Amino acid sequence: MPNYPSYVTRELAFDAIIKKGDTGAKVRRVQEWLSIGGFATTIDGGFGNATEKCVKTFQQSKGIAATGKVNQQTWSALIQPLDKALQPINFPATVTLADAILRVAKQHLAQHPIEVGGDNCGPWVRVYVGGNQGPEWRWCAGFVTFVMKQACMLLNRPMPIPGSVSCDSLAYQAKQAGLFVKGAHLANGNVPWPALGVAQIFLVRQTATDWVHTGLSFAGSGPVFSTIEGNTNDDGSSNGYEVCQRTRSMESKDFIRFQV
Image 1 (cartoon, rainbow, N blue to C red):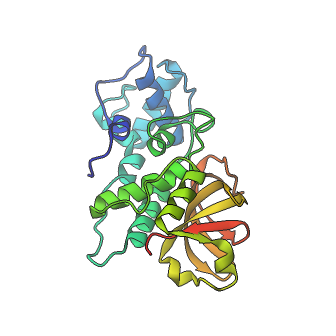
Image 2 (tube, rainbow, N blue to C red):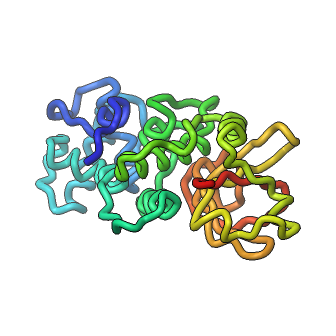
């Protein structure tokens, strides 16, 4: 596995058995992953009867001895979605950066990252925004940046832009690097979709200098394109709760390509 930063490895780490009567962040993480896995309980940091029951039910669903205690085996099963999203990918020697980024994004999408425990909260959000969480941490740009970093680590090559948790910063970085493409140039045919590569970053433009949502785009054709984006939902909200795949129109969009 790549050498991920501490705020990522902290989400995967198991230190000791977690059981009824325990309190604190380690219990909250158990409750978060139980809820993400469909065994929802209150995320309050207190390992009581309800959490113990959910742990036992989860263990039974995974063929693990239903002790109600979270040992290494149970913890590994709880965090399996994140572990799978972070696994290396065997890229062919000829893979482009855009294709590698898209493959990593699809690997995350397959694990259905979602918020849990509050607005812009939970382990997936913390991974995407440097260990932070909370209402102010809209994480669409963080998702894009993390996927880029993961792909670049796997390819052992530099980032095309530094990345950010801010849509406006992504746009500024792309302009500085000569990678920013106005949506109008695609709409009028001055820039064809193939010139953007297999995948790119899209930005939802509010004004000429303000972008309010972002994600990865691919399979552009005429006035529409496909996306994999975080902090959204099926309605396309810019402050949703999940990573999902959507189809978007060209209207009010700009783009960042991964190569000149």
